[in-house]
Amino acid sequence: MAFGGLEKKPNGSPMAEINMTPLIDVMLVLLVIFIITAPLFTHAIRLNLPKVASQPARETPQTITLSIDDAGKLYWNDAPISEADMRARFADAGRAAQKPELHLRASSATRYDVIAKVMGAAQQAGLERIGFVTQPVAGAQSR
Image (cartoon, helix red, strand yellow):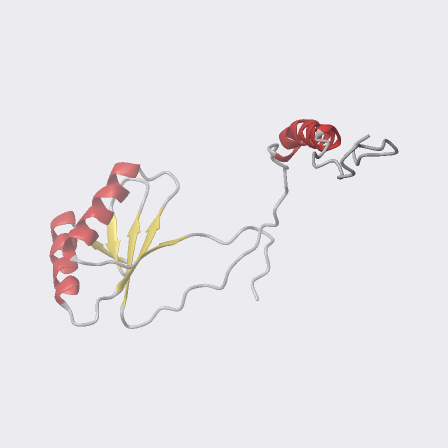
């Protein structure tokens, strides 16, 4: 037996060995359980997350609103402007002590390269805060 049992040994000392078979059996059972259950944790769960609307951004005196229409024409605070004038105004705004925030409005049909040029010009001028203005979701309630 594992603990020396009923046998009488001539020297009367207990058996000093541990029977490892039950420990190995338990370990193998746990290993099989983990092998079976581990793949269940890797599958993604599809969730339908709610759509919400956020509060409109407050326009402060340090805000520039730049709009781009479908044709790629630029509007600085709703006044038409050329690309060269836009770059010059960005440079002036970038040199200001308190740099303004740029709110970029672009039509959904505007080409990406026009938007990328505007963002690149703003970044080169030192304007770091650029926000994209979007339309609220239809039927969403703002609080």
